[in-house]
Length: 219
Length: 224
Image (cartoon, each protein chain N blue to C red):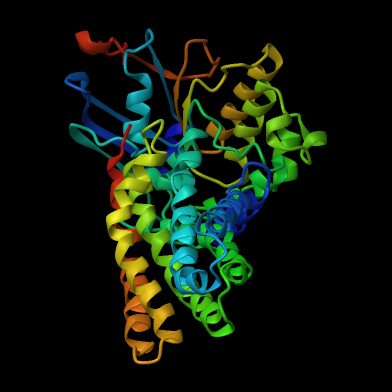
C-alpha cells in the first residue's frame, strides 16, 4: 500500500500529473477577483474567505476525474481490482495520495491568495485551517463520482456535476467557520467541528462507494 | 510427471458452467474446465468470439451470467477468490509511461506480493530475462511497442502467481521475442504453473489443450 501511495505521489508531480495544474487554476480564479470587483479593500476582505474557498473547491474538482481514469486507460485498474488487498483500502490510499498531490498544495497556496484578497492574519489562518480539514472530504466525495464515471471517455465535467451537490455542505461549513473566526458573535468551533465530521464521514463512505462502483463497472 | 505434480501441490483452477453476456447477447454458455499444475489451455477463435471475455471472467473482472470460477489449493484459505492466484496480461500493459521501467516493476512487485510461498525475482533480473536488462532506467513511455510488451511480460515474473492469464501475449512482438515468451511460459508450466491464453498465433506450448470459441452461435469444444 505504501508502494501505491508513493507511486501516485510520483505520478502527480511528474509530467502530466495534475498537482501544479490545480494550484495554477486556483491562483487564476482567485487572482482575477480583485480585478473584477475593483479596488474596494473592505469589500475584498469581506468576501475573501468565501472566494478562496470557492477557488479551492473548483480546483479540487478539476483533477478528480483522472483519479481512476488514468488507471483504467493503461490497464492498471484491472490489476488493482484483482489483488487480495481489500479494494476499499486501495481506494482510500489512492484518495490520500490524490489529496497529498492535489489538495495539500491548494492549502499551502491559500495564504498567498488570502493576501490578494486583503484578508488579515486571523482570517488567513482560519481559511487555511478549514481548507486543511475540508479538502480531504472533497477528494473522498469526488472518488465516488470518479469511480462511477470511470468508463466514460469524457467524464470530467460529469464528475464535477455529480459530486457538486455533496460538496456544497463542505463549502458552507468551511466558509462559515472561516467567517466565525473573524466576526465576533459567531462561534468558530461548531461549524469547524461539523466540517471535521463531514470529512470523517466521507472518509468512510467515499471509499466504500467508490469500491462498489469500480467492482460493478465491469467491462 | 504432470499427474505427480498435481498430487504434490494439489492446486486446481476450476471453471464451472460459465456463461457471459455482453449487452443483450450471451457470448458463450456452459464452459467448464479444470486446470491442474503444469497444464495449459489455449483459447482460439475468430475476432469477437469471446476469448477476451472468457479470460476477464476467469480473472474476476467481469461477472459471469452463470457459473463460477474457483481456485483450490492447500495453502489457500477456502474463501480466496480465484483472481488472487492469477496474473492477468491484457491488451493494455498496465505500466505508467511517466515512470521508469524500474519504478513500474518495483511498484508491481511490492503491490502484488507473493502467494503460495514462492518468490518473484527482482525487477532487474526480470528485465534481464525478457532480454532488456540495459534499458530499465528509461521511462516506460520511451520504449517501442514491442519493448513495452516485453516489459509488461516481465511484470509477471516479479511476483509469483500460479495462474497466468494471457490475452494475445505475442501482439506487437518479433519472432525472437515470441520464442522467448514461449520458453518463459513453458518454464512457468514446468514449475507447476497454470497458463490460460487467448491467441491467434500458435504459441508452441508442449501439451496445451485447445478450446475453440465460436462466438454467438454457441461454443464448440475441442477434442478434449
